[in-house]
Length: 274
Image (cartoon, rainbow, N blue to C red; front, side, top):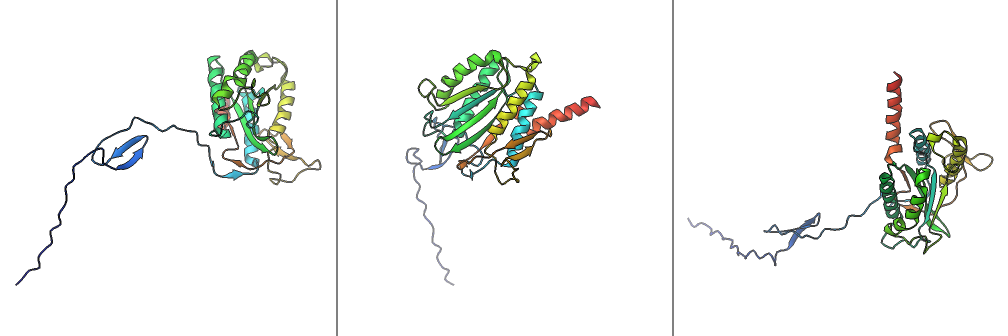
């Protein structure tokens, strides 16, 4: 009985030359090649990627507004009152084309926190990004800076921090950054003076800081203001102002005054009271 012949597959052996091998994958800057362990010393630059960077938002949500207001009040409780109001206009400051507004904010606050740390001061902050017609994207930052650090802070903020965050310093673009004091001159919670005046000014600054609030989050009052209630029971009358769409993160706050930090603080008070 004749059996069918089986065709034998011939495999052509090719020399393993690392110069001719194709790249199979590239992970973490390491080029992995077939048949070799060749690694490149070149690493890709790591950039900050904010949440939802491709998702536009037209307004600040009610939940986010309340969170920022609660964070500002909590900063006072832990001895880090937000007593400095910083506004940065990115168009006026000539923000580099390869920087997003959120990148500049993150870098600026990182530098501020590091410098305050050298002065034995812990930073606390909240910020909200807006995009107004005519002025472009700009950010409002409320942060803690004790009075004895103010002069040094302002000098660095208007100069080297702006440059390292991808912008031109104030001496070249005077309208790029503006810094204002919140509360009376020299105010600090350890002095136990001027707190009422600080509280009133913080109230007014917060109402302005949160003006990107969604006008349809709840009905407005007779003065066309939306009154939001913070966890403490404090009422903030906000008059929403139009803002163009913001891509990516629209607002944030430091971790030490976040919702989780506030929960831990309340839990600690309950434990101490029991």
